[in-house]
Length: 184
Ligand SMILES: CC(C)(COP(=O)(O)OP(=O)(O)OC[C@H]1O[C@@H](n2cnc3c(N)ncnc32)[C@H](O)[C@@H]1OP(=O)(O)O)[C@@H](O)C(=O)NCCC(=O)NCCS
Image (cartoon, rainbow, N blue to C red; front, side):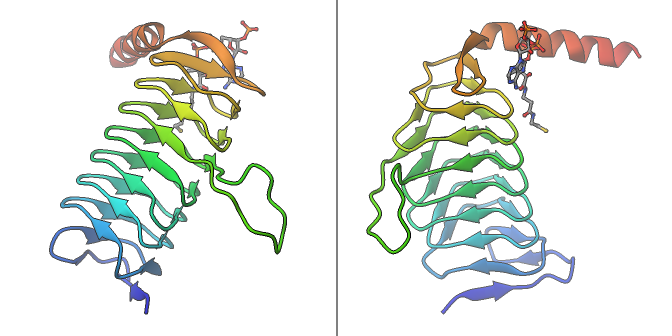
């Protein structure tokens, strides 16, 4: 029987995690770590979520999905069964993970697992195809369709996603933007 945790906008402490949103559905076989915060209209179907994560509104996480510590999952993200996300991963709004390469309604489904390694970043609206591994510290650009494994610390963009840069360049650009932002 699902648990419906409805917060009326207030903090609802469970003992280890906090539901700040309304209309949150968490099945009893879901495990959630200390310090994780869950916002509005989230469905968690028997998944495992680590410590200090943020699960934003309208996120759906399927049975058996594993999510590490310190992950930030933005609004409208879809994570079906077969996905594993390691620690310190950022997932931008409306990113979609897929698990069945040849879906047919009413037919059996075959899961091809997806792995997102430590520290990776998935941009807004990206689509990750079944069976793909996103490497450690890799960056997937907004709107990319990822059809192949992404090497560690590589930036990929486009449809289909192709390498366009490195994590080092990405961090350098971010540091520069931050530096300029502070002087405005
Ligand atoms: C991928 C990304 C990091 C690249 O940033 P960047 O290194 O500054 O790249 P630039 O803006 O200098 O663009 C370099 C080239 O890549 C292209 N490009 C940039 N982002 C792209 C994207 N998301 N998809 C396709 N091509 C992209 C640019 O058009 C440009 O092509 P050109 O050389 O032919 O003109 C950035 O565009 C991005 O997508 N960030 C993620 C944003 C996001 O989803 N945030 C979520 C929080 S809200």
